[in-house]
Length: 433
Ligand code: SF4
Ligand code: SF4
Image: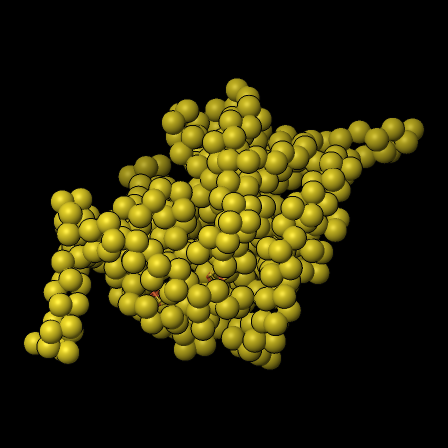
């Protein structure tokens, strides 16, 4: 094991110790997360709404999905070209960014001298480095999903629960925080907290937005429609009551047609136990031809919709047949996180700045290399392959992570006990002797 390996191993150990310390936000998150995973894997999902469980729903569409994603990976260039062409015809401003850096540059140019941005659904923006570049340029980032608003209010830095990112804060803690930040006394009850934000923040969202940022659940190549699902209504507000709506996402968000795009959005909703009360289909900027038939953009909705489609590692992974090529099929549903043994034991310690679980660690590896992945807790993965069995597209994340572990071991970055186990297996045929 190299010095670097030892340093990374100590950092992971330190994080695990914090996770186990009573009273810390990490411990609070861990407890909440374990409960959420248990509920999810026991299938207490949206069955009160539907006849089937989300697992049955996934199984019904698994074959369709696999074929759809394989077709995309095998014809990526064609789909991207088709999608860009139709979007331009529909008055979207579309960019194809070869790298994350190029996407960041385009984004900053599109932002102009705007100093505040309102955002939601932006995991992809994080992935592409947009959040980092905004922070570097001192642009004020305003979250709009209530869970993210709370995370921002508490200045909680670790990756959070993807469905309710602030669900581990108690009502009493939130009311106390609101008193501290806004000097407002609230009853520590969910409805009072929601009312507080509805009566204050909602007005700001309706009146004051120059630029908003989202990703997309999926984009249809056939007609260039962007699909966005949500339950709060914040995405509807910030994508309509804005001058400019910027969408940043990887090219892998493209699917053949609108039905596929809605299916993927619906799957994400079912898998995550969130009833998407609003599904937006955005097919261009706001437009009217009511004055003498002259087409004018920007009536009540966004004047401009800018789409930045980012390639970065994606085409290279497909064409060079890289070992993580399978990851191109990912639809970002996060189904692999709930049953993951490492995630359930370590919550947001088995994670990276891109989010929770194996998918986030693979992303960190792709962007920042093997040392970053080891520091994220790569070796906490037990290779159980629950992720593979739960994935609606049957991506074997366990196998990808195993190959990353091999690379780490060859570079002397594996934890010391693994070498000891290996030696004992070879000598004693028993790792524990
Ligand atoms: S193989 Fe690793 S990433 Fe996949 S579920 Fe098991 S512990 Fe999690
Ligand atoms: S890898 Fe995970 S997030 Fe991606 S499609 Fe499979 S289950 Fe969903």
